[in-house]
Length: 201
Image 1 (cartoon, rainbow, N blue to C red):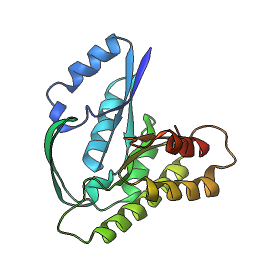
Image 2: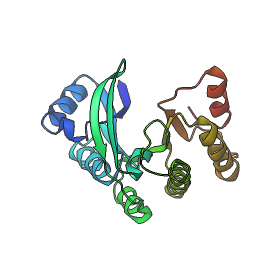
Image 3: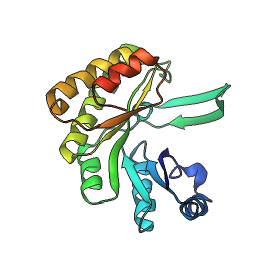
């Protein structure tokens, strides 16, 4: 059996064929975690997970890009895509209740810091401070729910590592199992080792 630990079939691009892809994957002995990035996609991840008795799970969270209105265009080696994010105010109670009410929520994510996609018309230090503050709230949410985290980091490791180190020292240093994964990792082997010291994958 395989498990795709990070997929976005709950995004609107897949609205017409998500169920067909899920059924095919399950038929091929591949389970999955559908990862949310804001309230709508988190809710949709839970709805898909609850639709299937087993093999489909949900992660819920607020991706840092969804804290601001940002138009994103990319045409590079990693592919061509275009989308607009809509600013969402973090609602701790919404995410807490969504997780508490649904046993198939297995992680808090996708959460983190993203300094690659920043709004050009805002005060950048303030935007970064906001991302960091919300990340700390989301880490606390995960801790209060006893759930692991899925961390997104792009161009922000110098700010992310101290936040995760502080969180680890306060809440996780006495446990031996991993408590999350750093996703969208763009660092080197030395940096990966720093995350591993915090029991992160």
